[in-house]
Image (cartoon, rainbow, N blue to C red):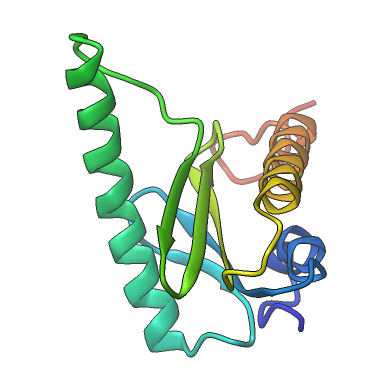
Amino acid sequence: MTSRDPGEAAWVLDPILEIPHVRAAALLTRDGLVSGYSAALSQDSAERVAAIISTVQGACRTAAAAFADEDAALLRQVVIESDHGYILVAPTDHGTCVAAYGSPEVRLDLLGHRVHSQVARLGEKAMAAAPRVADGGTAV
């Protein structure tokens, strides 16, 4: 199983999709847009997942802050368990998130480790990118 996007999403999602019983994965923006998704999802499904995950993350941030009696909270991950399996979502520091779905047989510890490893790699890549100047070129 490979990701549909041959660019950035492929190198992020493919290691997650190699885990036994992982059925789908997506790279999403926090505001609900799709950056890439696995072949198990249609474009419509990927867009619906992105919108739902964005809403879920917002609700979870609000709930975490409310339970802590604080004004705000940063999410590290969201895990949803259902009779169909698990959804694990991990946000990055630069406005995206990685979401993966596995059947009930998936090893959740392995899935969590791989998703967070890929999130860390995304962060390293973002930090290594050359800064851009206003006209679109790279700064010297």
